[in-house]
Image (cartoon, rainbow, N blue to C red):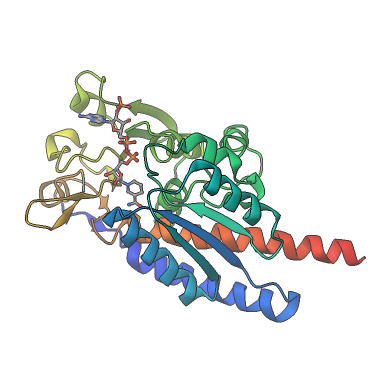
Length: 291
Ligand code: NDP
């Protein structure tokens, strides 16, 4: 059996077309221009390319992207002051500070300074907490994109055993919570997990978010499993690859995501979706205020 390849790129294109239509409607009927403020600090090449891709995607969807780029000498106070400005600016619906930040800036303080109502990355503890207790919140973009990819397959999630390898605050932990909400049974694995392959072989849906090239070989995967590869690793050759050995695992899985062209494009798409959601909320508040 050879797996069906889940094209995040195609699904992202489809969703971005819909988002663009919604953005146009907001502009035309509600006079609201969805706007995302993006702050980039320093010269990390990967961060530069992520920010560039986010800006391009915003522009294609008709979302205004205000990009501010600062040198790595920016102080924490200066960054907090920009965030405060964005929080108070009614024309800005989403704020994104590209991570990682230089070491002298305390990342958690920055995440917590962003207004939860504009936290389109979904990293603020209030949004994370709300997600845990099934309240309306911004959902972190990568986990949200993964859920949308699985939904697009029209397979039932209820009762499925979802195994997540990786427990970061931005991918591993929240993606498990999202699938728990969908009535799946969740197992988390991490660097201290013993006999990893014995566990991962039990997964109906295996989500790998580690950042180690080719960690998962076909012996880690159950026949017919759905495999989502979040990892992005650059090989010495310069080529990008995931955490999953794509060629061998695709012979065993029922569905698999490629790297690149899998989770990545969906992450950016859900950022657009969250920004749209925030602008739509603002438009409905405007209407309520008029009445
Ligand atoms: P982190 O480094 O924050 O977390 C990695 C996790 O993997 C940790 O929980 C760690 O365990 C676990 N881990 C490390 N080694 C092993 C191992 N040998 N076996 C099992 N678990 C292990 O990474 P992120 O979650 O931020 O990102 C993970 C990957 O996903 C990266 O490659 C990143 O580039 C990519 N990524 C891709 C995105 C996309 O849109 N495509 C978006 C975000 C991330 P422990 O907690 O014990 O240390």
